[in-house]
Image (cartoon, rainbow, N blue to C red; front, side, top):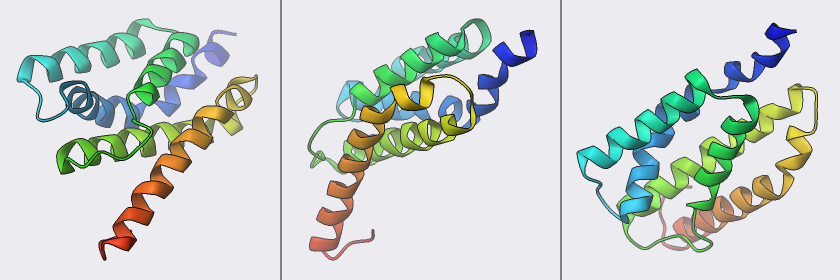
Length: 131
């Protein structure tokens, strides 16, 4: 039974690695102070080492809430928002392989992250940039 309760830990490597800095950028609306990045890393670490699947999904929900509805103009903030949206979207797609309601529960968040990324890519194409 314990093994089943810990399966979610197999999904955390990318978010745990990539989200703290990106979230610090989004919260600062620009280049964050070192302390803000450390705080975000500690939060992610605590969520993984001492949390549960439910608390980890709440952490990702909070991360997704930092992604604005409209892509930011500031390139640093925009890049951070893209990282958060891509990481959360990828993580929530992987939930399909796990039993329980987590995948279905994340459907709205997946749609919102896809819509944000589609908007970013459409703007990039319109400006002649990369997709």
